Amino acid sequence: MPAQTTAELTARLRTALGDAAVLADEDDRRFFSQDIAGPGVTAGVVARPASVGALCRAVALATEAGHSVLARGGGSSYTAGFVPDRAASVVLDMRGLERIVAVDPANMRVSVEAGCTWQALLAALEPEGLRTPFWGPLSGAVATIGGSLSQHAILWGSARHGVSADSVVGLDVVLADGTLLSTGAGAARQGTPFLRHYGPDLTGLFLGDCGALGVKARATLRLVRQPGAVGTASFGFDSRDAMAKAMAEVARSGFATECFGMDPTLQRQRLKRASLAEGVKALKGVVANEGLLGGLRDAAKVAIAGRGFLDDVSHSMHVGTEAPDDAGVAFALGEIRRIAAEHGGREVPDSVPKLMRGARYVSMTSAIGPEGERWLPVHALLPLSDVADAWAAVTALFHSYAESFRRHGIEVGVLTAVVGQGAFALEPVFYWPAPRTAYYRRVFDEATLAGFRDFPPNPEGEAVVREVRRKLLELFLERGASHLQVGKTYRYREGVGPAAFALLEAVKRAVDPRGLMNPGALGLS
Image (cartoon, rainbow, N blue to C red):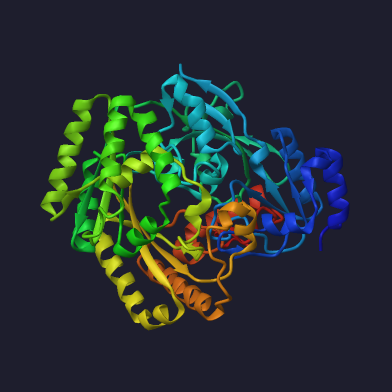
């Protein structure tokens, strides 16, 4: 039983943080207790600390009161990453911790509070001609640094620089008792976070942990100089195997900074979603990001290609590359074109990567179907050599449900992506007609929602989606896949060896002896 009632804890949080920083209204608590996949148990209270000191106090007060603590960033999890499993819980809205603490070009690092978004960080660094190696997921307008590091994230820069964690130098983490722990070289008594490695890699323990070991307060990330030149290209393939093999070879080559692919269903869904307003905004970004003359030329090419440029394409691969100068980009694109051609790819207009580069970060409408359908992904990270067989197994599973999918209006597209030079992300994405959730009603304004349908209840369709998703989890488990945002969805406990999980449990007991930090995440009780 909790040591204090939620009402008592709420009063103490108000005293410590201020009335405005504590939300007790039921609608607020319900919203902050769900992610894209759906609701959990409604939290007892929501706290919005505005400083690292306030965060330490909030965590200490919550655990002293016997309440669980769950840190929420931008809220774009779809694996119950921050969803409570009990009413006696405190959800921390981390977006009040949004300061960029220090930009240090001399040592090529930046320290930032965990609630800062990737978009805000990039905007602060660009005038300095700098950027982090990994510079955010597609949802970087809302996704926070801390959330991405807790859940892992991929996209911008991932083909060359890996996942978000690979850009981290050090962390300041709040443990269950409110203690602030520094990692890496920053843990030295007179040290600063200039290097990740100082003895065992304690930083790594708190990356991808879903907040089960502590709450990230600040992160120090590596910096790189902005590229002198950027190039994009797209290719069509007649089969999934041909595209998968081409993407694997692009990964091995190291020439791409981003490399992702789409199957026919996902292509159709993405192009249906593309609105005129979003297209114009992205074209403006192309002009702004690539200079006036070059940007106008590329924007004109995109406009001429229109929305039918993938009509005759089965599977499409899209790449971005960066180099110090145009010659370096031209060489990289030449090698990527050679690889694509060797696997039967033909070049098509590069509208998709061009527009994505122009927009950089998209609104949360990417988390809803083009007509208002529910949207729910599931993914696996696999070795490059295993992708063809795994994708074939996934396709066979979908074929076995073809009639159920047709009957309930379910569509499944597949997104693929390169992660570093040795990993391949395979992400099936479900779309099905169902009523909009409270999450959608809160994230989108009325004008945005007016552009989408609100479908009638479809419980049988949702049950099919959940069933197939569970079977995909089993399939990925059998193949030894890794996962990014593990949350409370992926079967981490069963997926790792007993010695590895026993060590994680020992670490959990050391930093969170009462098991109150996001209980259930990573399979930890």
